[in-house]
View (tube, helix red, strand yellow):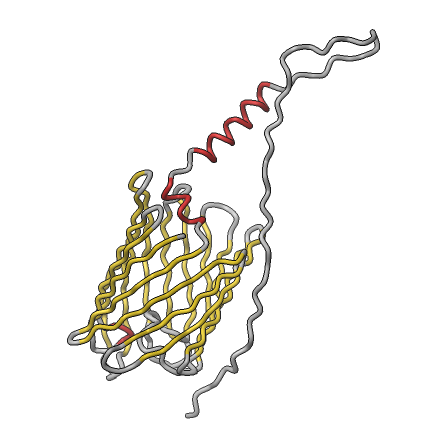
Length: 283
């Protein structure tokens, strides 16, 4: 069977971000000197409105540093991936241009493969609808595209996604099935804390491969946050064996840097176990 090919399309990304400043307006407590009997005194601000504005301003100022970390536009991440008898490196630089995010990355395997890859995504949000299309292309002519969406206007949202590749390998850089559908649910617990559960399952190659993630993000204190990613996987490996296995990931978040560690048995449904670690800067 001849693999399907998807022709790469050029992406144009240019959008300026408008910054709005909210100006606080105050009124004098002294009455203006009346010029004539026809002049009416100006009404004083409502105590309820004044207290409401002060409350909203204090809420914005009360956000902890670890929450403000999400506002950084750039990230530089160095990842090191360990398998039995091998160690590979991945360096990724990404920057946000308004709703667009672009990245360039290099993958280095001292024993075998080396590649560069570029990618971009666009964040579209309106009312209850959030859509994120993504495209990534590597120097090996491998290409991956996806559509991720969140549906819902309250604290609970539905997660729906689909991804497709041209069936060329990214050399173990895609940890979930690449030609797949994603279904799940997420719930916002606070301004930082959230929990989600979703399954990514193969819909093209008939491997019955599926990865189910349960992700919990929690703020420990003003300067520290942590995320746990529980992984449950099942499906046929490259050798045809049907497996069930469990992995776990930890992401430690600081205001200006982060660290992550993952244990992934049967990585990419191969016969190898991978330990991935990485550290990154936000700026």
